[in-house]
Every structure is written in structure tokens, then in C-alpha cells.
Length: 543
Image (cartoon, rainbow, N blue to C red):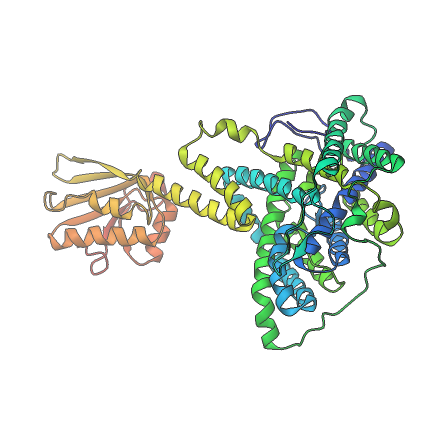
């Protein structure tokens, strides 16, 4: 199910049973109010996330908060998809912690600048379009794994504030809440979730997550309940971010240190951002913008590195909160960034009073709404390979990180696709009244099917004239060319002649470009290319 839906009818999507309508193109007062309230809700949810991820990376909380503000502001202005929210994320923080531990925070800032430049380059080269190669089972595994990761990330809020310590690889350890404090925490989480579930049925004037946070916060503050609050994580009070050139030696050695981290961070950031872009696009009915999102993420991270931030990327949890709270335009993202800055500069004393249980309740509802529950139903209905990929990507996302999970999922899917196509190669053979042997090849001829293609021919038993008909096949790559050459060589050794027919235009160009074939005749004008080929003597062994 999906929750806190304030706009649009429910409908099926590829990830679940929820779809929201695009925002009104005319910015009416009602639309602006919805966008601002949605931005406020997102900003409240950003605070503990940014602080927690800063702790994971081993840097001051303000470094995470400044990153959330700057990255969120810039991507809201020029990002590829209105409605997306970007900020400091755990996927990047777990990579940063080793760099900070070994070389210090200034090297992190320099790395974030280089990371941004690499992302801008990827956007200029339009590499973002390759995200369309991510198969649907990988996307299902991605959202399921990320939902589990978001859920597990909330577990740290059930530990005694201040009890966790850094082990050089992030925050770890800590004492779990128990007894009364634990029951109070669980109760408030449940109340928040109940409010979010009920609120849309009562009114759509206020985003349900904001109502849940507000009501629970008022109860906690009014009755003075002793529960963990945002201020228990760390003080978020600070000033405006200031321009700061990373203090690192401008040497080749510095470049060698930061380049590997920058490449990994850039890749992770773009993968997470582009997958989130697809997910948000599926909910809002929007398409395109991949290359623009790459550039926006790059500009945002470059700027963040010069303003003391830890960098970031798209945040699927906060993006889901925004979209499902009614945020459809860039106003919501801008509002979230501005509200976050106001929290830091003038509102820290108020924000620090908000109970963590309310924010945990919101994120739990995000988990429920993000997880593709329909994927559990289709596991036994889809091909075994697709079911395996869904589970594999989910597990790797949880155990490792989403970038590795997506790469693994794409590789497995590609290998499965290649294997399935490799098994499709076969030929129908018959002999003409003139005594020539015709092989009608069916299926794609590429590296995976090249061996099977060679094994189809009965060189010793075939007559002196052999025709290979590709009307129902296609020559794809160099391995296919080598397979054709191998077959021709065998017939040459046997003193027999080979002709190729019915090659499509692109196959014809590929073979001629490789220098393997010459035009022998033009006996099929319907194909608009020569379709009866003779193997060039000395190259493929023909006569």
C-alpha cells in the first residue's frame, strides 16, 4: 500500500499500487501552499538524516547539514526531475569515512569538488541515458533493498542517545533502549504512523507526515515526555555556510589520493540519483532529464565542496515523502532547502525539541510505501532468472551498497539475456533441385551463439555449393564475423563454395567495413542491398 497521498487517484505502477498525478501547471495559492508544506515536511525529515550520515562519515553534523542545504537547493533549481530531493546520503557516507579517517576532512572537501566535476562531465557526455539499460527486476530489487536499508537506518534511533561511538569506519555500538523508554518510543512511532494513515481520510489540507510530526511533537513537549529528541543527536545550530577552498597540497600525490574516492562517489551518486529519478518519474508520469540530473548533481557537489559540505545525491526516502505529500514542482525542493537553512540559523532550539519517534514513524511509512510488495507476488510467476535478480539486488543492496547491487544485477541480467539468445541459433537445411545445400539461419549471431553457429554445418557431407541464408538472422559483432570466417575456411579446405544471402543493411555494412565480403550479385532488390555474397578469396576462403 501507499500512504500520505494528497493528490491524484490510486492506480497501478510497476513498483506498487500507487500513482500520483503531476502538479498543476498553474501555481494557484492552493498549489503553492501544498508545495511549501511539503517542503517543510521534507526539511524536518532531512535533519536527523543529515546529522546521522555526518556521524557515519566521521565529520561535524554541520558538514552534513550544509551538504543537505546546498545540494538540495541546487538540484531543486536545475535538476532533471521536479519533486526529487537531494542531500547527504548514507550510500556516500560509508565511502567517505575511510578517507576522512586517513587524511582528514579537507581531503573530503577536495574529493567532493572532483566528484562534482566528474558528474558534470558524465552529464555533458550524456551518459545518464544508459540508466535505461537497467532492467525492471533490478529496479524492483533496488527499491526493495533501499526500503530495507531505510528501515535498518532507523534502528540507531532506538539506542540511548550518545552511547554510539566511532570505530574509524562509522558510528557503531551503543546501548539499546529498554523498559519504559523503549515502550514510550515504540508507542509514539505507532501513533505517528496511525496519524499518517488516518489523516488523508480526514483532510488533505495538511500533508499527513507533517501532521504526524506536529501532533506527536506537541504532545511530547506539552506533557514533558522523556524521549529522545533531535537535539540529543547533536546541536544543529550554526551560521550561513561560507566559501572555503579545501586546504590540501596541490600536488599529483593529492590527486592520486582523492581520485579513486571521487570516481566511486560520483558513480554511486549518479546511480542512486538516476534510479530515484526513474522511480519519481514513474509516480508522477514524467520522463527524461537524466543528463540534466547528472549535471545538476555535479554542479551541486562542486559547490558543496567549496562551502564545507560532505556532498550528496538524490534521497529516495525524502523524495517519496515529498511526492506523496503533494510536492510536484521545484518550489517544494527549494522550500525544503530554505527551511533547512532556517532551522540551522534561527530555528535550531525549536527543531531540537522534536521527538525522534515522530521522524522514525514518518520513515517507517516511507519504507512501507517504497517497498514493492507486488514483487513478492510475482516471484513465482516471472522467469526464474528475473526472480533471482530481484532477490540478488535486494540482498546486495542491504549487505553492500546500491551501486554494487545495480552493477551486479545488470551483469547477471545481461548474461542471462545473452545465454537465452545464444540458445536461439539454429538452421533449417534443405537441398535444391540443382543440388545446392541451403542453410536458413534463424536467431541472432553474436559472441554467445558463434560456437553453436559453427557446429550447425555438416561440411564433409554437404555438396559443392552451399548457401547460408540470413533472412531470419542478424550478424551482430566481431565474434559473428569470425564464426562466418571459420565456416568458410572449413568449406574452402573441402573444396566447396559458400554464398551468403539476405543480410540486412546494417549487417551488410558491418561485413563490408570489416573487409570480409564482396558483392557478387544483386538478386533481391526488395532488400535494397546486395543479398547474394561470395566469400572473398584469401579472406574468408571462398572462390
